[in-house]
Amino acid sequence: MSTNRIRALAIVAAACAAGVLVNQVGGWLGWVLAIATAAAIGGVARWWQRR
Figure 1 (cartoon, rainbow, N blue to C red):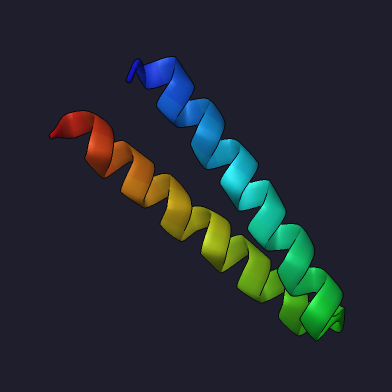
Figure 2: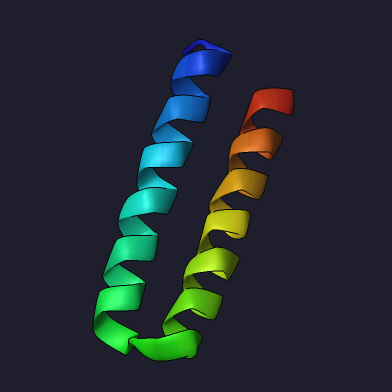
C-alpha cells in the first residue's frame, strides 16, 4: 500500500474512533480519549510506514 493510502486510512480510522468515543463517553473525557486514540492510530500508521 502506498504511504498516502495508509495515511488516509489512519485519518479516517482516527476520525471514526473520535466520533464514537465522544458520542459514547461525552464531555471532556470523551474528547481526551478521542485525542489519545487518534494519536495512537497515527503512531501505528507511522510505525507501519517505516517497516
